[in-house]
Amino acid sequence: MTGNSPTDCGKPVGFKEKKDTLRRQTLAWRRSLELEEAKALSAKLCDRLMELLEESWAKEMPILAYAAVRGEADLSACCRRWLENGKKLYFPRVRGEEMDFVRVRDLGEDLIPGAFGVPEPVGEEIFCGKRALALIPGVVFDAAGARAGYGRGYYDRYLADRTGMVKIGICYQGQICGQLPADPWDIYMDAIVTEQHIYRMERSELWN
Image (cartoon, rainbow, N blue to C red; front, top):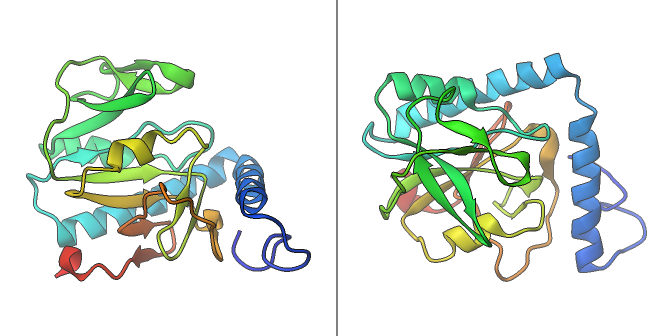
């Protein structure tokens, strides 16, 4: 999605149309990945993410993760290592138009198919803290930290008043576009990790 595409040059399109077009193009690109190619990209991304977290964050910092679906970057290798190292790990569970993050101790036992076919945690320990590392999937991002998901707004609503969250977007390099139109309610990332790069936004209080 980097480089020239029908939304980067040529006939101008409206704000919503451009965002929707970027979503469609990026989802089509992600669906085109062969299974082994996607596994290799996810493995590289996990290595880069582990490097970032080991370099920058304390062991006691809780992590809000996700279960990959529909071709999303798979962080299960990272999650297994974090659990082995004693990190507190939480996964999202949908509750109507909202979602909670629930503690997971075993990836095989604690996740079952839930809303939209996404694996959800079965436990009862809901994250209620004010500070955590939130690893956020999405359909398309830009290098300034803008993010577009599937359009349902779960992450935007969850993160809207949780200012203590460090928001790390997770995606393949092919999901980074030149410039993503952002709605007023869209939440910006503090960093984005791909298999090729770590993009750190200019929020110096996070990285000093």
